[in-house]
Structure formats: structure tokens, C-alpha cells
Image (cartoon, rainbow, N blue to C red; front, top):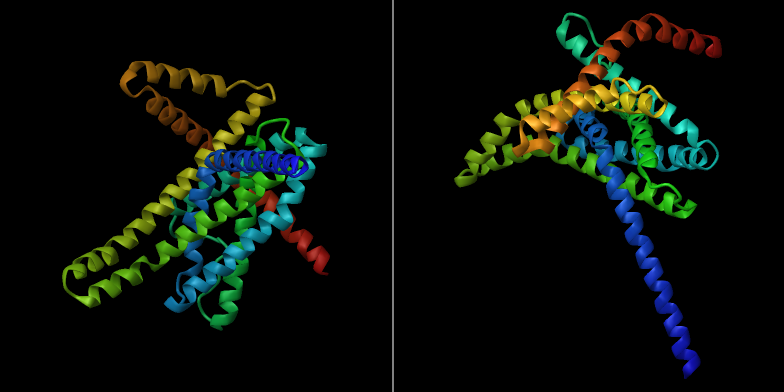
Length: 320
């Protein structure tokens, strides 16, 4: 009997350790998830454009396909690379983050540039709406998953850099898997709700009665909301990208503009003590975004006249 009690006590102890580990993994995942909020906003803002022009019954299946591709990107392609970097080349995480941050700055600045010059077509990877709908859907999904890969790489790298030092392999793995599922569900669940809102509004408007006004309001509001979401997503890109670059330079020993922005944020916070934290965050985000936007505009000619021709030439060389 005493042996059985000792065994049950051991099992209870193991269960407590396991529960504590699950709590630690969940806590790390949530903390890491909050650090990628800007990239998440952009991901949610970009995706609805890929279902534009399709029938209502194809919208959710398309989003589901993109979500599955996003999970494949995170869990199969990116997670092993993140763990290998953590184990064998942790020094490479910050430079890789900065490369991803520079890409976000470029993408955000390019979107703004094309809004300022609406006469120029924006080669954003969306396909012509003419032709076979099934083929178009396949191309749209492939384009969305390709875009998601870049954003997912940034999400997983930021999450990896956020995890506390000294965590074991399985704790890191569990936290990153949790981040992958959490972010994917958040982004594509939100996208599914967004793209179906106008259909919900139409349904309510047709029912009549008290809900009809709500339905008509949803139909009127959603186009403006989509425009706002796109604007917020673009701003989030340059803000997150600029922040990553600034923090990366600071970690590499180049303490400006990080210290200058920090000093300005602190001065602004002291000027408004009633909302010091909010003011400090707002000033920091604004200045990070300005740096990111300036860097993005500088990268546009480099990408257009140097990187894109090199990529096209390499594709022709391999295909030929």
C-alpha cells in the first residue's frame, strides 16, 4: 500500500511539473505573440485582398487554404530553421530580424509610393481577374501563401528573439508551436469575419425589422473599414520594420537613433505625466515609423533597379 501511495505521489509530482511547463509555454507564447502585433495587423490587412472578386461561397474555402499554407510555412519550413539558429547561431537572429525589418519598411513605403502615384500600376502579385476562376483561385492562394511566408518568417524570428534565454529545446519548441497556432488562428479567423461582414449585413438587411438598419449600416461601413485596415496595416509595416532596425543597430553597438528616440520619448512623457506611458509609446512608435518610412523609400530604387533585375536574371538562367 505504501508503495502505491509513493507511486501516486510521484505521478502527482510529475503532473505538477508538466502543468507548470504548460503554463510556462503558454505564458511565453502569449508574451512572444504580443511582440509581433504590428506584423499580425499587416497580415490581417493584406489577406482580404486575395479573396476580392470571388463569389461569396468561395471566400471561406480560400481563406482556409491560405491558413493551412500559413501553418505549413510556420511549422514545417520556419520552425526547424528557428530552432537551428537558436542552437547553433544565435548571433544570426538579430541580423536576420533586421533584414526582415528592412523588407517590411520597403513594402510599407512601396504601398505609400503607389498611393501617391495612382497612375502607376502596382505589381503586388495579384492576378488579372480574367480567365478560369479555378486557375485564378489557385494563383491567388499561391500568392497569398508566398506573401505569408515573409510575414511568418518575421513573426517566428521575433517570437524566438522574445523567448527568455536558457530555455530548453522542448520549451522553445512548444512556445513557437503555440505562437504559430495562436497567430494563424487570430489572423485568419479575423480575416474570415472581416470578409463575411458585408454578407452578414446583406442578410440582416433582407430580414427586415429592427436588425435591418444594423445590416444596412454594416454594408455601408465595411468598405471604409477595409480602407482603414489597409492604412493601419501599411503604417504597422513601417512602424514594426523601423523598430526592428533601430533595436538591431542598438544591439550591434550603434546606439543612435535608439538613444535619441528614447530621450525624446522620455521628455514627452515627463511633459504629460497623466499619460506618461501612452505618450512615451506614441512618440517612440511615431519616430520608429518615420525612420522605417525613410529607409523604405531609400530601398525602393535599390529593389527596383538592382534586386528585381538580379532575381529575374537568376530565374531566366535557371529556367533556361
